[in-house]
Image (cartoon, rainbow, N blue to C red; front, side, top):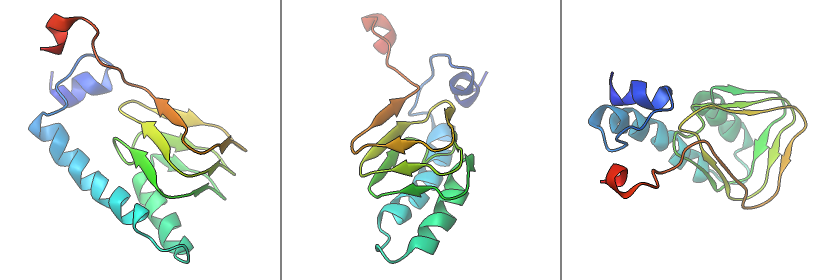
Length: 122
């Protein structure tokens, strides 16, 4: 089983694995571009979100900066979702957000954790 398959299965995996990091870095380039948009570039922001997210509904808005391990590649937004500054999604696994959801500033949604057993952390 590859490290990516382990990650997708919710098992312990090595995040510094070359295959995982190669895919992740390409995706994170789009997240960087999103966060560098000007306030007037709403069309570009929408285009980037559609490229980054697994699913994104109608009339969704994320106020930069936005942070996500996989730039939203495992995130599914319904319609009419609003996220204020500094939304952080630890999207190593899938995150599902329904319709008409509003995120306050500095919200973090996480699907991953770190082992608490010292031997596993090594």
